[in-house]
Amino acid sequence: MVVSYCLTRTLHARVTVARVGHDHDHAAGALSAGGLHRRRLTVALVLIGGFLVVEVVAGLWTNSLALLSDAGHMLTDVLGLAMALAAITVSARHQSATRRGVSSQHT
Image (cartoon, rainbow, N blue to C red; front, top):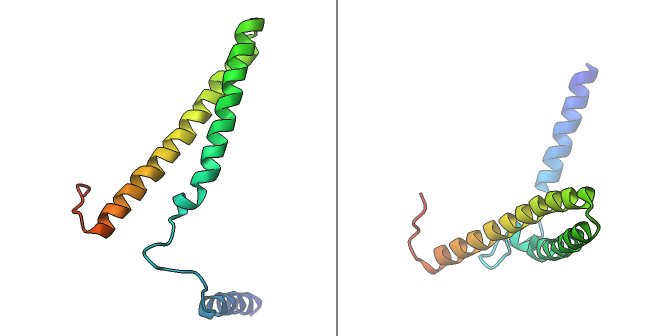
């Protein structure tokens, strides 16, 4: 009895939330999720890239294997952020070409 009450209460809450009108835009000009975070990713890429350069220089100057290994780890972070930004850019180009009516080469 308690389980069905909790389940009914949860489902009712979900339905109530779903019925509330939404205030966001579905227009073609709306930004994608990646487009919303492009600036933050770029700032993170620049900051981490800067720290990477500083760590490499400091590691070579002081002959510190710890700094060089951390710089190697930061290099993988920079590569991951760069790949994310590249994917956002390619996706945005594909979406804009689709909106213009250009046929897509993707399957």
